[in-house]
Amino acid sequence: MSEVKYSKEHEWIKLDGDEATIGITKHATEMLGDIVFAELPEKGSNVDKDGTAGVVESTKAASDVYTPVSGEVIDTNQMIVDDPSKINEDPEESAWFFKLKIKDKSEMDSLMSKEEYEKFAKETSA
Amino acid sequence: MSIKKTSLNNLHIKYGAKLVEFAGYQMPIQYKDGIIQEHKYTRSHSGIFDVSHMGQLFISGGDDLTNDLEKIFPADLKKLKTNQSKYSFLMNNKGGILDDLIITKTSDGFLIILNAACKYNDYEVIKSKLDNQYKLNLDESLSLIALQGPEAKNVLNKVIRGCDSLKFMNGNNYVYKNEKVYITRSGYTGEDGFEISIKHSDAETFVESLIKNGSKLIGLGARDTLRMEAGLCLYGNDLDNDTSPIEANLKWAIPKSRIETEFVGSEVLKNQFQIGVKKLRVGIKPDSKVIARGNTKIYNDKNQEIGKVTSGTFGPSVEHPIAMGYVDNNYSTVNTKIFLEVRGKKIPANICNLPFYKKNYVKGEINV
Image (tube, rainbow over all chains, first blue to last red; front, side, top):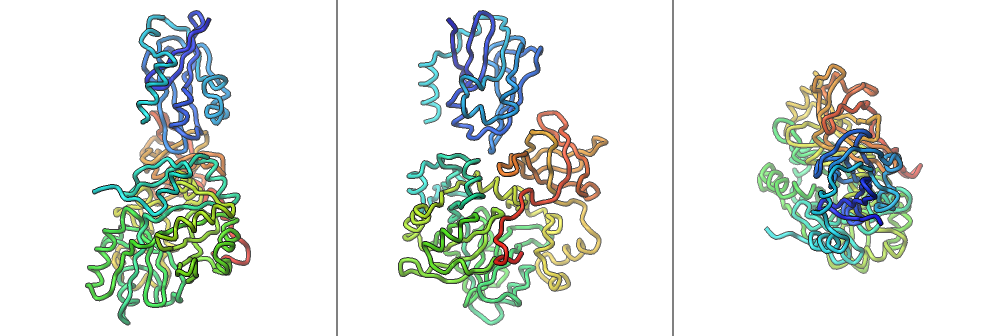
């Protein structure tokens, strides 16, 4: 069974074996508003835990997307580059950002469960 | 200083506004629909904007008022008919813009609509330049509501009969609930529209009746994307006290009859009219989907810095990133290739004509 965890930077990460799919949370999209631009990391590049791995822009401002774990980028979602509004529509399923072959599963340990994240999101936006 | 609220604050909350502080006021940045939907609704139907944070300065008293105001503003105020409006500037001695504003001739003087962040300073500057000879009233007992969009005239006419006969940049007195309201046909979105000056106590019911007739509240976020598509400047972003109206590509707002006359900043402007300017405000269209926001550096094809973006966003109606900024005048010609430095990369773009979005004015009714 796959495991979904959440970061304080409002990314979600779904782990299947050593392959992780990463995107931004519904809560993040609600804070950002209408997303009009997305930039993704290059396939084959390596990203480090908590480092920048992309950008999303709303009509108002640009925000960095961070990777919650380290790894090699094995796939990116061209759909959200072509139509960034998909990120608002379906952020936690079809509008994922990138997939990583992860290096160290223990990096997942510091991330939050769904319940913990929901509590965190509620507290930080209050 | 505590944050101020407009008379529509409860209404903003009722309609799900996300509130932010802007120029000392708590203002709606967007409502439930979000900026893109709000922007598109204004272009296709009509939108209601709370602009009560802006200053409404009434000046009256004395036969020399028009003469004395012409020593401050580069507008042709002598030719202005009662209820007619003109876009103009308050400047410093160097021709730098302290504020951009709309002056309307009223039955007993002038009404000047000022930007929220500038209004108290404007008041002091104008008062001292007029040498305290006239009655100045920065009236904070009035709300200001803009109604913009192709359906604005139909919606407003259902609430206040007869206002659809107003011509562009003209105003008049009307009656709403037995109280006087002052309406001008103007706005800042590139659409046909009106601005309604109304008592605070009537503002909420007035806006509710506009909503009942099909209009929607629109936040500052969409106001910003609408004005950018229309190629209009935002004071503080695209205009400041170090930039003249000529540099801002707004010389159309200075009538020929005033160029040779004296007003604050006239020496500098006269000089710029004759020998030109070093920097000029231009429209910028990036080749790709990358958005270049304010303060983005602009380069030429030899990697030399030639200017700076002052406003930039994604234009919901043109469905493309748009920007404006100042470049070295040698690079201001339309279709000049430039490069925008965004997140360390040089993004290709072109100088383009403004506005990005063509005006949707009703034929035969509007004189531009």
